[in-house]
Length: 371
Image 1 (cartoon, one colour):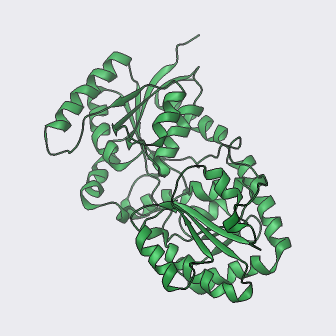
Image 2 (cartoon, one colour):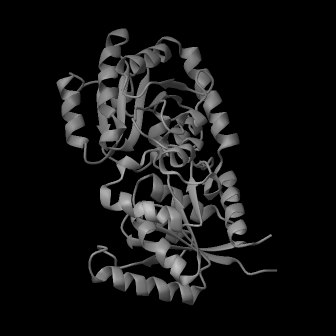
Image 3 (cartoon, rainbow, N blue to C red):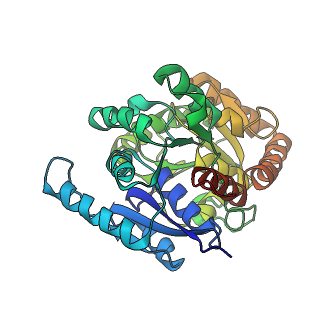
């Protein structure tokens, strides 16, 4: 019997966010008989660190604070020593900074190098990292994307060959995200329908569009409520917008990223109002929790939601279309329940974390010439 192959998964920090969650899930779900997983980061703070450590996975903290000072050099030597000491055979980077740092070094050290590109549009990446990724695109042995839409984007807009791009959809932990009824807190106790979203508060999430759509829906049913869970740079601006729209009593901001499944199970309808997405974990997890889901028709979202069967799609940034889709679910409880049930089934059977891990194991084995 062969010993498991040591591999290293990297991220800038072990914090909230899609890339960090994808790393943490994959690290825990890879078959330990096949791969011995290590994790590296530039900053060790964040809620993902605890779950990675609890799984017995070693974490290397690299002292890189900038690519323009000595910390990058120190980090490079530390990475080299770690790779040699632990016989690392493959490095996969889950974000732009660690891709730019580890892929060239990985090639120099003679190990296989893989990057994950889960943003649908590269223009969202700031210029220094954007140009660095263009170089890394050609140095990496494979580019992993989580949607066919992103693969086509990289082929058509960046000239990358299809053979170098590997599609692996995100997976959901069905033991954590599943339908279950639970008592509503006082702030939602009398709600007829709870519409909600959960995200990092960044501009491209367009929660402002959701707020405006919800304001238009209130005359249909004054007992509907809006629950917005998360935190980030747009918090104050979006809360101010809520107040301007007169929604202080009907819209609640929960400033947290903890207990995600519990918050999602309070929502009858989950909304993704983003203008740009890859294959969003939030939508997949909301579906797994049995939420009727309304999402903007961007990126890989149509690969996840079949309109009218497992959810509803609307045109991105289109306030009227979003309000129409939501009004349909408010008026038709039977449709809401049917979509929620179908969504949970699709998430569980088609996009399990087990399937995702097996697919990544196949990629690693191919790159390492294993049979």
